[in-house]
Length: 169
Image 1 (tube, rainbow, N blue to C red):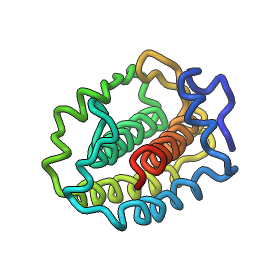
Image 2 (spheres, rainbow, N blue to C red):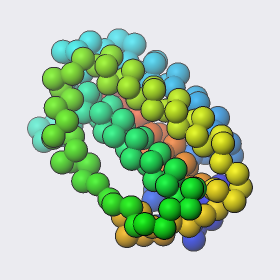
Image 3 (tube, rainbow, N blue to C red):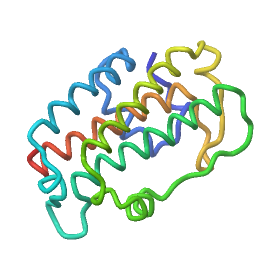
Image 4 (spheres, rainbow, N blue to C red):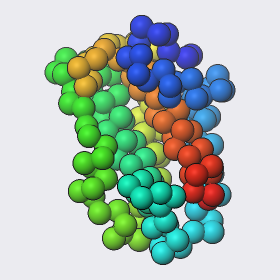
């Protein structure tokens, strides 16, 4: 079930709206194959490509997806388990800069993303309707695990589209 507007901050609407299907779990699963298809022709050197100065490299985009997958999955877990502590935000640009993704092999980044995605798929499948509807605070805003799951899917759609359109992957 798609999250209602009151379940997430308005900023995340841009990601939730990227998910066209009704079953977000099928979208998350299908994105695994989409990533395989996108990286099929890439090598470590070509994955350092930036379409413009100051933009992330292809490796950094995938690294950002990895970091976001991990952080959003943790947020969903905490809120679903009833944690009432406000969860911190994160500065994606700082994370990318400090991670040095361009120094890592591309397959290492992708393999780690697959591990986190698979773990998140299992976690999300274990949530009850009550778990999905709990409201928590992340980055100073109210959000439900259901909305976080849809945000992960839409955020991935967004960045994979950028890779196809701007990086010609």
